[in-house]
Length: 91
Image (tube, rainbow, N blue to C red; front, side, top):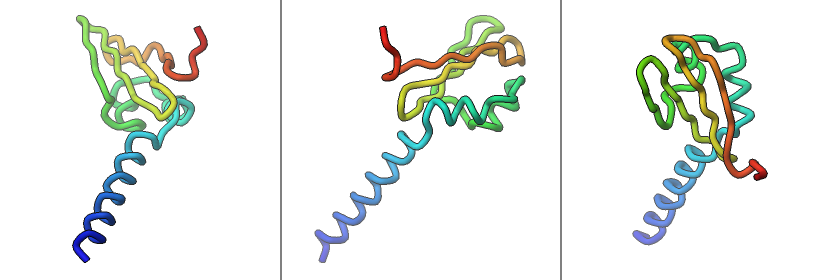
């Protein structure tokens, strides 16, 4: 009985982790951020970014997706650029 409970718990945890990591695609992220123009709007639409890098007034917000990542560049309070990268890139 204990083994069955442990297996069910581990399967549930694995499902939660897979959903959290692979739930959004690059296209989903871009679609949700389509009309965003400020930092506050971006965070409201997408939540906290996976990574933030800051140099002076410029910030780079990175959101991981199941098929790569989407990067937004923020200058001051204005979202100025978005780029995608990841497994779909052909170099």
